[in-house]
Picture 1 (tube, helix red, strand yellow):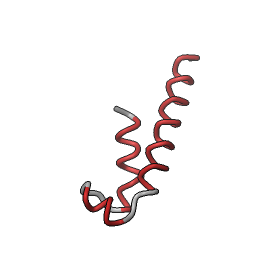
Picture 2 (cartoon, helix red, strand yellow):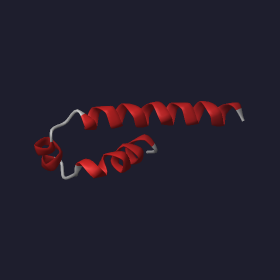
Picture 3 (cartoon, rainbow, N blue to C red):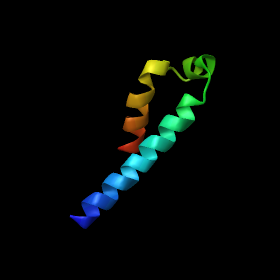
Picture 4 (tube, one colour):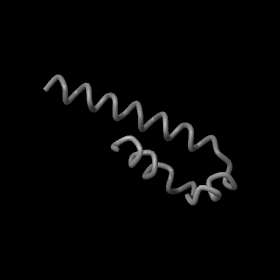
Length: 50
């Protein structure tokens, strides 16, 4: 149980970090890497759960 909570917290921190970093990019920079601004939450979650 404790390990599951620790894993969730680590995943959530990773998600928030990726979300913050991607949100700082301009629309042009996002387009260069092939994502739209509306894709940021999904891409951040995919990155966090790898």
